[in-house]
Length: 348
Image 1 (cartoon, helix red, strand yellow):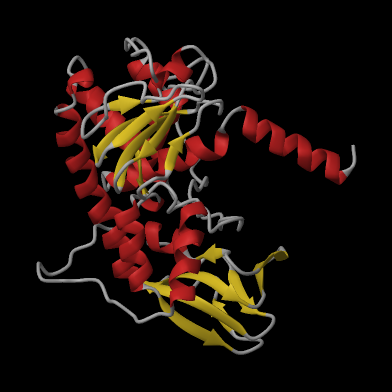
Image 2: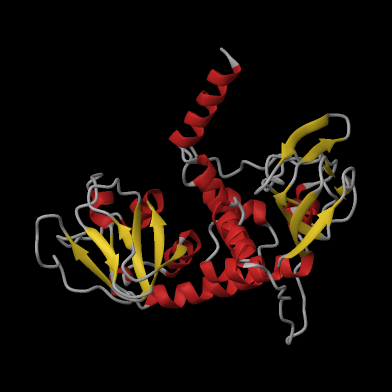
């Protein structure tokens, strides 16, 4: 088998089992509740996808769940309890994250990059916006070690220009990083030494964020958002039969997105992979060939998109924001497990 064929096979396997998204959801579930035992949270989240769950199964002592993008984590001879979590972040009540001036181009770059970043893509838009303002641009000369293996982690980086080499002692160069690649989160989230050395191969520009701001926004604000989601979900009539623990689990699986006026959220004929609850705003539902809207306007607490999931079918209508709208989305696997018995209205 050629390298290219092998790579395609790996990609197909990951896509088939939805591994990247579910691993990302599991890590974010631990971050949102600021767990002292994130491996247990992650294990519990992923166990429901296993064909045969073994309750006595334990984690490998040297396995890292969150990696610095594609960097291989350092293997450390220590027990699971010692290595898995960063200390809780304690800041003054009047602490506010820093705000650094940026060009509109820089803001757009950071905003789009965070939408696809493994660690940040499931954060709410308001989380990512706050992070965007807190990033500061830095420049590095050729040959500069931006981070050094074994050193204490103090910043997280997103590369915006240039090229870097990522190396690990005993392995040499393991990958090259270019525009849009991020690194440095593992050491911050785990209070662990740097897992690799990142060296500027060219003149490099990168956006950095300090450890405290990174942790507070990802952990502290995420935890507040989870509590807010739980209170919101308890008020949604269609979810009234869910138990408290199911509501809490559902809140951890939600992703929030914003849609401008006249933006289509789902389109008739598309594959259905998500269920939506309106957090704020208003949407209309239309079908090709039908002059009038096919349902009442949907507002806060209303839902749509479940019919395509329940019937494993394509979208039956187009749903469009008629004003700036925020929606909470849940993917097919979680929808089917928690909400699969919902009675769908005729338009969704």
